[in-house]
Image (cartoon, rainbow, N blue to C red; front, side, top):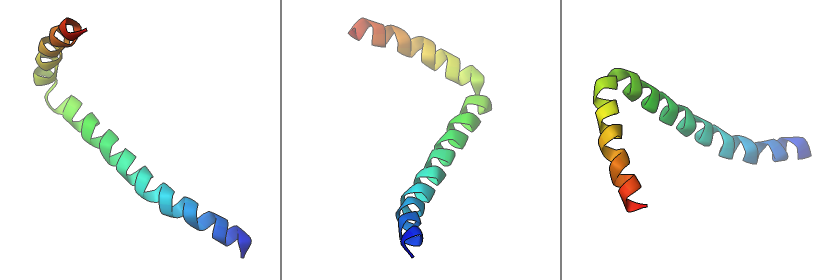
Length: 54
């Protein structure tokens, strides 16, 4: 019984977090490989703005 109680919070907190993390990784992976031509100019135009703010 104590071992079952100690496993429940881990499952309750672990599964949604794992699913959310997997979804974010899949989404970023698909978008990075979906349009690599659109991603690189965005980074190139975004970097000088970030460096200029620093």
